[in-house]
Length: 278
Length: 318
Image 1: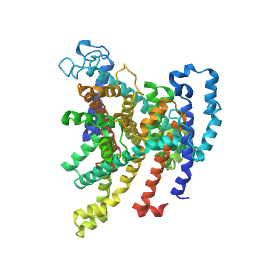
Image 2: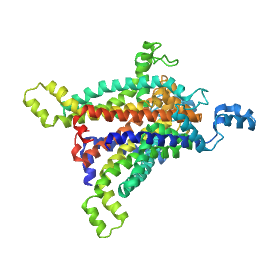
Image 3: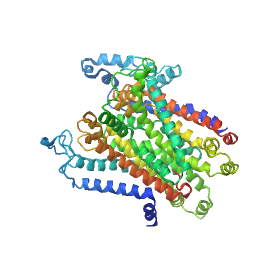
Image 4: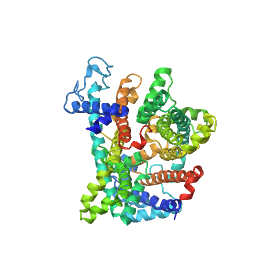
């Protein structure tokens, strides 16, 4: 509770949390089908209808309601982002702990493998994975997770290495705690703070990458509503129907901004050294 | 062994890892290269003809043999033949690279020109209105994807001023410098804006750290003018994180900006890789990805070297 109060007391935390909660609410309504219109129904007489009382943000080339599509698009983006970050953080944490705990050749081999993955520009690696597995939602999740995993491994390994040499770990070992217990109770629990910050920033980045992949036609496939695809489709109609571009564009931006603000606030709260700096 | 020697020794190993990863990945792509190369005409070939083509490109051998051959040729500066262009891969890459390099340099210049002064300005007015404005601007800039900013930019220019960015035939810098800059300025601005936002944030926080140090206070107490304290005494010591971030971002940009090239229809490295992946042009993908990873790692190495020049304190540590 104190933690939540700290977030709401922090100026960017307050705004970031409000944005993220608003997006979650919109996505939730979208998932329950509580959208103003059916996002897939084509209102043929109202094609390219500008924003109005009936269609709050207008309609697209096929007469589909933009507001409804945005709500489901947010849901789609968030699903991909949350799933991919969960996979990346999960595997990355296990690998980071393993590298720190087993040390020596394991540490060397794992970290060199991560160096190889980090030598690729992120979007290029994601593209390569999508090419191998074919475009789609599951592939996006895996690609984003794979690209972000090395960063989690590094974030976990560093502190784990220094915690490993602390007295309380030696003490736990000497009275016979199991390795798994030490790893989760003594190491992992002490790394939760940097991990939380990283997860939040990773979510911002995952939203960006999902939208980017979809924009290139490698992510979510039509006719499923997707912010990246909507933005990409809007390009040819930019002058006649600018709302097609502005609405999904600002929606993507807002979501990323929300997580970035939240991540900044969390860093300030969890690491007092950097307070007011970044 | 000091850090630098270790980094140098790891360089070829990581490159080898990158090359084998790419080699395997591209061969896992469904479908075969010959069919992808010929498109619909592949159906007209007899199995024997396909076999002959595969043999010509060495695609009928086991993976390990193909990889060995490729690596051997690579050591002799030969990246193979692109099946889509019918030309040596290295030539295809080098033909596209000047545009990518120019775009990366322009973006870097724009980012440095905006980011460093904005960050320094905000740090010297910490917690005041101007600082807040810079921070909000940087936060928004950092959260705006290049494709959103790029499209908004095109829209605002066309709706507000009736100007459309010149797209279509691309004019290289050495053929028509003015036309070239006209085509490059918007993409460079698009990439430079987000880059500037993160530079601003890092410059601001580094300056805040330095400004709170004793020697800065001493300089002020001695009566050194404020301007000189900031630019001459404090800034050089705040540059390390700025250089690191510039290096990483510049390294990424040298890999081509797929999405921005797509939006502005520029024939750079990024779009070429995307096409090559979609066309299953094995040799071209392998060569380009290796080239990109090499550049990226090289820039990072140079950044490490730059530390030595910037901060004499690091030299002793090794």
